[in-house]
Length: 357
Image (tube, rainbow, N blue to C red; front, top):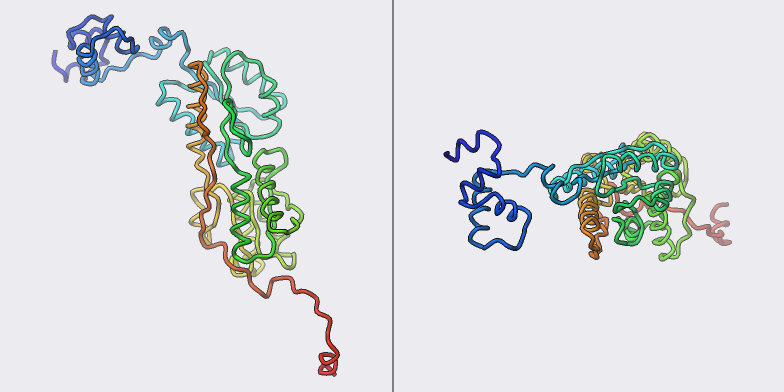
């Protein structure tokens, strides 16, 4: 049988054995990385596998390993850029590792988490990744006792074997320092919605940089991650006096802030500098191009899979897989306009009063 004939249908283990001149048992041992195979026989089998493009059926692998070779994923907030890209990374990396994925999306983390996990355990799955970065989901996840390994996406947290983290506290601090270094006396903040881990982490980093600079943090301006909420926040900024710099908790809201300021005749960055967070693909095409903090969310998803694979294998992934945001400086930030800076009160001198007469 020629190689082209083998390629016209799915190759079988018997085809590999015949081409390599070994038994099917030897082929199975090579596939399962059993040590009792000579180097010469292993090389012939691996060559035959490549030539025939043999792919072992997933059910056979699962039977041999006594595993389902399926990862469960619980998700929340997939309308947001970060969680959606993390999910893509999870699916791609799981496939590369030989796993399929089963996804459950939840609406109410306080009440849906247990049902979502029970659904996945019935699939069954070898482990579960939770991509639901809100406080309620984290509380529910920590209360679970499910009998399979669990990895949680936890922005702003410290690295542990059962989580993957993004250092959004440091990222927000860096965004704030960038504006202060340009000469702005303070930085205002448009935050994400309450209850999200990213919201708390970004507020903490913003406040930390202001405190280190000896500046009292102004009141937080609440947002909802959406462009519309950013626009409404931008109208508030436009109506305020003395605001020269704004750190916005995500790029979608930053787009709304920039539009509101522009509509009110306030130039960005000539009058007010605006920096976002996340670095969505559209950020370079904003007018002006948006300065922001880039997070490799795809890498976060791949790290979650690597961590879960290690736990499934009964080992501990000791590597610190935290992802640090990186400043991307574009055109929406610059030095402050002196005419917009709050002017200190200067008591007129007698000579000044005389000149006014």
